[in-house]
Image 1 (tube, helix red, strand yellow):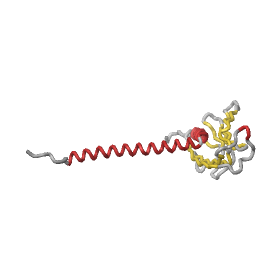
Image 2 (cartoon, one colour):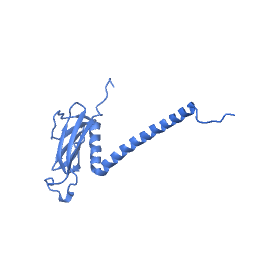
Image 3 (cartoon, helix red, strand yellow):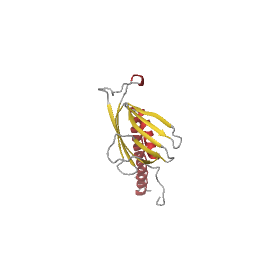
Image 4 (cartoon, one colour):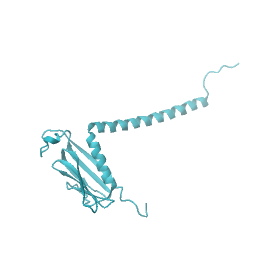
Length: 175
């Protein structure tokens, strides 16, 4: 009677296939956890900026068009036409990034300060349907009750660059 002294080639190939599948699943989990860690780090770094970014992204993506497109960087207010016929006006006023939503027809204006301590605001529309934003802001602006008109000297500043696409103007026969 012959003794069994090892594995066959088929058994080895099955084990290698199973190990390969496990490595692929593990690699996907590692990539996902690194992305999650990065998103968590950004939100912990400045949770208000995450909210502001989300609001700006939503405004641009849901807009029908930029009413004042400019291919060069501009400090002027960004004015977006909504699909409902209203306007969203985003500008810096006295160091605050202010969003005004002007409803169509009624003329009602909803105004909200999105971010305090803004030191610079630039935007452009390099091609139709795309909006680039560049926002400079103070990391820890002074509390609202003691805000002065001048940004604090020596405070830490940060710049963020964003590119958003207008998605609300689609349609037509070629879609």
